[in-house]
Image 1 (cartoon, helix red, strand yellow):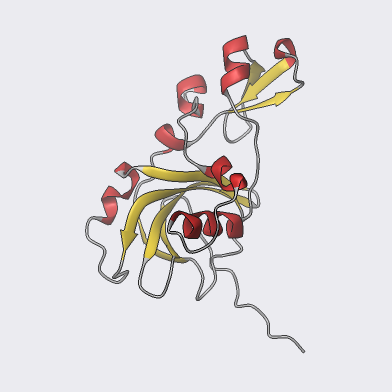
Image 2 (cartoon, rainbow, N blue to C red):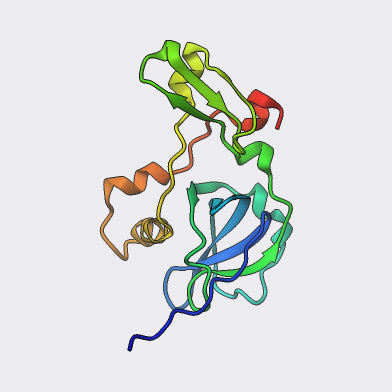
Amino acid sequence: MSARLPEIEPVHAGDVFAIPVDGQRAYIGQVVATTVGSLYVVVFDWIEKDLAHIPHISAVPDADPLFATLTLDSRFRPGMWSVIGHADADADRFLPAFSYGTIDPERVRITNFFDTVHRDATPDEAAAIPTREYRSPMRLEKAIRAREGLVPHLPSYDEMTYRPTPTSASIFGS
């Protein structure tokens, strides 16, 4: 009989968490929002050695983002990713708007992050606003480890690199 994984720890918008890189260091990230079955997370250019004594945890949302993605909560287990504090998430800065529809720019629609407001996209919006994509938390962890030179870099990791895109707040005010 195989050993069961520990239960997933509950996570909430604003939770600051650590993704271990090795036995001594961890990257700091934040859950910016939660939706049914998924999380929008940002991992910052912030490495800590002493997770028990992180100064200025409230400054986490102001740090430089490295990665941002929709992902799942499956790595929030003991010995994996751990919640280390809480800070107000900057949803206006980070939560993207999303596009959907056909490749024909005349038939693209956009929605806010929570999928509660929709409208036709302008041609510029159709080109700039990404589609909603979910990525494995393990892939995010490997992208971080690749950044540190611990595993080979794969081109798919670049999909999670933070790039400013039109946000829900800038387009819909929410």
